[in-house]
Image (cartoon, rainbow, N blue to C red):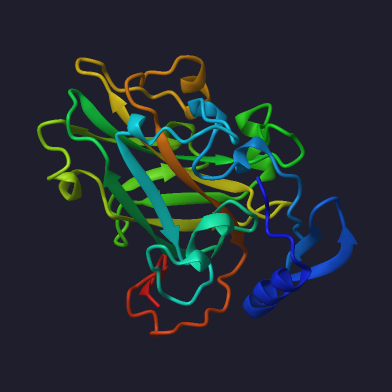
Length: 288
């Protein structure tokens, strides 16, 4: 994976947001970046691979993308530059910035909208299309990015919740609850793709609950779209386990992910339309 390593570009981006400062200590590829809480970017891990490739699903960085084996494409977009709008294909709200710390920055006590863009590729199949969402913490002291235990993870990283809508009526994910780290939506072939809006939300909302630990981008929101063969039951296994015993064989799993940093307080935003689209929301008082 190739990160953006230009000193001037990093300085412009993070200086504009008022969230980070560049320390003139360079590693092999990139400067050390800290935020107001003294967090650093830390080491790249296997959890930070680009959105189109991931070892969990048999995809390698230098291999051809076999699009014919995908049943759909899934793309997550968020307001990474905090201007109050999310535009499909806007590089400031997607691409390399999604998988490079700090990723999406959220304050404790606020929520932000994430757009879920699902694009069907195949309609000639039997079974189900399964759209999954998963949260986990990233251990930047390990090349694999994994912790030895759930308890170790919780002591080291922040906490987020993911809601289906801004009213917080349906909780999908809670990174601090072992039973709420994975959520799946399933659509059978008879209803796909015409009825996707009824089954899979087009937007979800991420809430900052506890501020991040020592590293920027210490949380990850992963979304997947897969094919489940007819007669096969749902799986509650996280993505790591699916790599060893893949339940989806006919079509290759497609996915996207966003790294997340939780700040103790909401950051100042530079809205271009007074937050008219409700991208940023107070978790307790409604829209800002």
